[in-house]
Amino acid sequence: AKDAGKNCYYIYDVEKDHQRFERFSLGSDLRKAIQNDELVLYYQPQVDAVTHHVVGVEALVRWQHPSAGLLPPDRFIPLAEELDLIVPLGEWVLREACRQMQAWIEVGLPDMKVSVNLAGQQIAHERLIKSVEEALEASGLSPDCLELEVTENFVIRQPEVAIGKLTYLREQGITLAMDDFGTGYSSLSYLKKLPIDRLKIDRSFVKDIGIDRSDESIIKATLAMCHTLGLEVVAEGVETAEQLAFLKDNSCQIIQGYYFSKPLPPEECLQYVLQTAPL
Ligand code: C2E
Ligand code: CA
Ligand code: CA
Ligand code: CA
Image 1 (cartoon, rainbow, N blue to C red):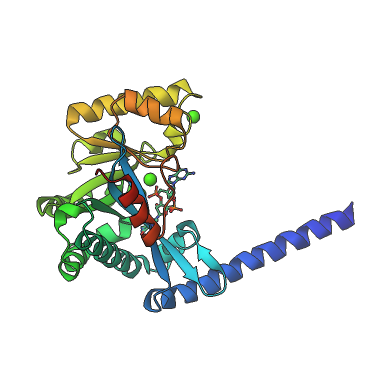
Image 2: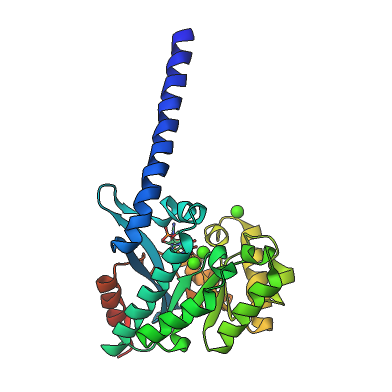
């Protein structure tokens, strides 16, 4: 028994070391990744609940790591935040997403929005407005075609400053969406104050449609409230026909999730949009 205990300890320790090493080496790689063009954007279609036409795409970053392969954002976004790399990373995402959407519009795609996730640190940063304006200018994309997704959590620090900047951006024609709705702190009290156009219902509620009555009630209540407030609603993480039917019955306008499509590399996303476009 003693030996087994020792072994367990040993395995645990190696695992810890491995994690520490991964964080260390990924961290120094991440600094270079932004310059070396190793980041890539995938795009997930957002679909009209009634017509099933694509009305927008969310840009989701991945890291094409030279030895570790394609890394999902959960593996490096928290690291980027810790190492103060989230601002340059976020600026790259903004520029690339705007460039791609303008390129698609120029080859004849119907006007649609590209949604970009903003980290709290980006919103707090003094360069926020400048970097959004630069991304639009460099690409030539119209502000009507850009949506910024923010989470509730950013408003905890300096809410007035953050709200002021977001209000300014919205006045320029950019759409603002509240991401991960229902998972943060101040949902209802801030809804009134925040300059938002859209709300995204978090996947944790959507996944229990048909399973958990209380999740269904929360979704219904959120939709009813948004309709009264004049906010559009996007449901995230829709995977089944049953979830889609429930959301449609309750007048949710926009659907995002594997039921329609996973996030796709740019060429595949373009194909998806063209195949589902109105004739
Ligand atoms: P998010 O903004 O909530 O993005 C939605 C996530 O849900 C994506 O994961 C997407 O692939 C996944 N998803 C979409 N539909 C379904 C579904 O039907 N089922 C399931 N199981 N999952 C679904 P992804 O791409 O791994 O991104 C994870 C998170 O990383 C994002 O969550 C976002 O918080 C963050 N992230 C991604 N790109 C960026 C970025 O450019 N900047 C910042 N700051 N964060 C980003
Ligand atoms: Ca998002
Ligand atoms: Ca989300
Ligand atoms: Ca539940």
